[in-house]
Image 1 (cartoon, rainbow over the protein chains, first blue to last red):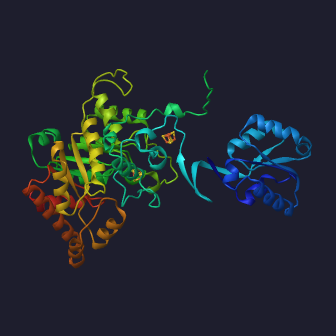
Image 2: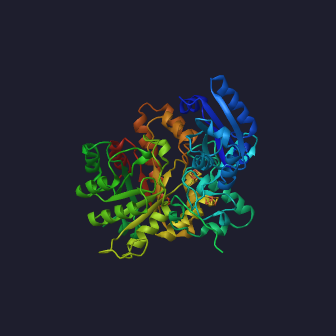
Amino acid sequence: MIISKQKPFEEILNFLKGKDKIFITGCSLCATSCMTGGQQQIDEMKNKLEEHGKTVTGTTVLDPSCHRLQVRATLKKQKVELASADAVLCMACGDGAQTVAAFAKIPVYPANDTLFIGEVERIGHFHEACKACGQCELGWTAGICPITKCAKSLLNGPCGGATNGKCEVDPDNDCAWVLIYNRLKEQDMLDTLLEIKGPKDYSKAAHPRKYVVGR
Amino acid sequence: MNLKEKLARGDFVITAEMAPPKGIDFGHIRECARAVKGRVDGVNVTDFQSAVVRASSLGGAKMLLDEGLEPIMQITGRDRNRIAIQGELLSAAALGIKNVLALTGDHPSIGDHPDARGVFDMDSVNILQAATKLMEGQDLNGNELSGTPEYFLGASVTPLYDPLELQIIKMKKKIQAGAKFFQTQAVYDIDVIRSFMDEIKDLNTKVLVGVIPLKSAGMAKYMNNNVPGIQVPDEIIERMRKAEDKTKEGLNIAAEFIEQIKEEKICDGVHIMAIGAEENVPTLLDMCGF
Ligand code: SF4
Ligand code: SF4
């Protein structure tokens, strides 16, 4: 899922300088799971904005905020509230905010910083798991992503820097390559590591990317 | 006779290491180079070591060459993508620099521009692959080159690593990609390098064991806590602590280690990294009788 984090309230207020009537959108999927754009966070944001003298003209949890048709249909249903606002505060990821901005016709401000594609370990604990490299390597790395979990995105094994299985760049992180080694060893598949991987094809991740399902 | 020929002949080889200056005054590195000229078989020129901005390794290597030394140009994957790395290798060959040591590189976060973006488009294995391909007269994508460069390729290895098998797997890939010699992270415990050499005896490659002369007990403790792959045994720290002339004792310890390596033919040579105390290298060479 897309992991997001709410921006400092000061930054949000700064965006909304001179905008008194605000419409708030959230998102039913990732941002709800990250507690950055569910109904509860929208209600809290509404209260805070009102405490700071703003009027909230309406709120909605888009289902989800990254789906154009859904966003368009939902915003249409609330067009009166939307039309009376000076700005939209979008409590979704960066994608969700762009989708809303495409239809809102008034300025749309992000309430969140979008961090990464990651995993929910438990409530409030997330870690990055995939950098959307465009050609998944997990098939030979025991299901552990070296592009994301190795600080240098190495593909031919570790640098010399791990100590006690921890990454030299940040000792709070496990060295991805020690993890990969251990799991492949358990599965008796260490041989896969002997094959040289040439430089990765980064053209597969040249942005902005587009994808249309072929028939 | 050059480094490649000496290693091929089975000579005990000594290499040193120098860093280009942070700035444009090459006076110090030039002096250090002159002091070891004719006494070492090659000198590594570091490539923005520890992710710190300095003059580049290509510039430093050219300076050594002009001084009549044999440079080993280090090149990492941290700061250049595959286009720049191949270009740097071509420039090196055109300038007469043949020895290249391929490294992945430290992460920018440890350097003096921690906000820099790390490139890591190619790792050490890929850099070796690229150089090998250039030696066939083509770039990585098979485009023809005007003239064919020649390199003697090296790489690094960390003998004190857990799990060691994982380092050895990567070492095998480096050999397959074209590495002909290895320089190791600094080792202080002769048993560590002895058992490492035993593990890799079937790989049939040349290994120069890394030596960093100690300057104080504090330096040893610092490295034990902060430098991956370095472990200075307690009795050596104790010797340093007790010594009156710390620099001399550090050189004594290094000289004893080097002699034992040579005597027992544990490795094919040594790689001396004086890290900022290059002026002591000639003294160490005197002590070892080189
Ligand atoms: S290799 Fe890693 S970054 Fe690439 S798609 Fe797979 S999980 Fe994502
Ligand atoms: S220590 Fe491991 S995870 Fe960290 S950069 Fe090196 S190989 Fe990658």
